[in-house]
Length: 454
Image 1 (cartoon, rainbow, N blue to C red):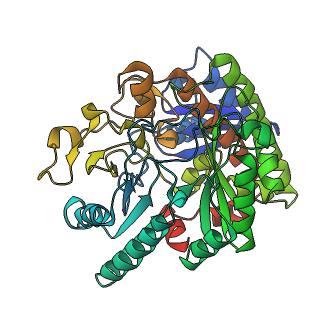
Image 2 (tube, rainbow, N blue to C red):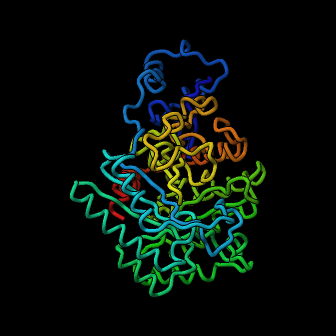
Image 3 (tube, helix red, strand yellow):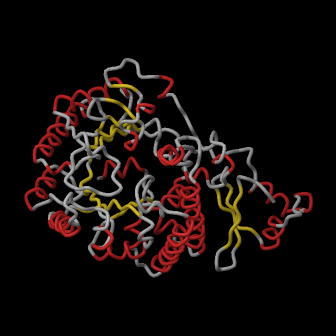
């Protein structure tokens, strides 16, 4: 049978399932019904009695799941505080020719704009500080960070609102003194860019003189850990090293707390093609199989490492009854560069076709900012059974590859859909042995709670 909302699969325990994306529900099927539904000659008229009523209930697409995640309870803002960095990573998208940095007055002007004009009714604000350059290269950046944090926490707490500041670092400047200052700022979990073992990391994350940065990053991570600061790894996967299992084992060996990863994006070198993606997906399949074995044996180290990653995201969405109708909070998240220009994505800075305007413009361009592209509006995504667990295509990838926001990358689509397939199998296998509620559900906190607890 052909239905864009339904996906059929089985587990190695010879159990058969139907996933209804419209209901966001997995239903176990009798073998006879499973075979009937997969038959090219299937018709519901061939079913009788309990089997027919059961089929009508589990395949119903007239009453959608009522819990739909469309709007975040907070606004997410990235401040491109600086594009100055001590590394020359081969896949970095920042403008390396024109180096700029915002002074403290401009930073205050931007944050005032966010909380007073852009989103005055939000209950909370997540401020990603300096995601283009390296914030720790200049000690003054930490002082600015501390000043802004204290000022706006005081202002917003008086209004019964909250604000959360974070930044990402390449780790090379983290000394004993810097780690202590980070701890004193109340940061208990720090994101560090690291791509895996030395031979992988140093292939891409190099200094301007060509020297690899891995040894310095590891030294910085150890300084953080010695100050009881947990480390979240930000990892880029490339076709040169499609070996996520090895990378994860390395992260476990150096006691990384959690990790998120993404495929390298065009036009960077070593982007994935169909052949190299298949190698990566086979490797990721073994990670899911290992997760099931580890969890069954009460070993949660790999599960905890991956709980904030793409591998765990579909399982979290199923348990929390979330539907994602768009990717990465497009049009709820904004990027503000050193000039005060506003963009929907960090990778689009400088592309005036996607600039919403400037913080001094009142109002912003309704035409540009009002753009919506949900999974049910995109020609390709709306026909996909995995759309509400995926959230749709990455618009930056589409712009970079095709100069067309609507066109979906076949590589990205295949990657995310296969991870969702693996996730459904792991979900049901854990459900079969009653481990979902006891082990997995406690990890599936709402994103807002995760942010506040950090």
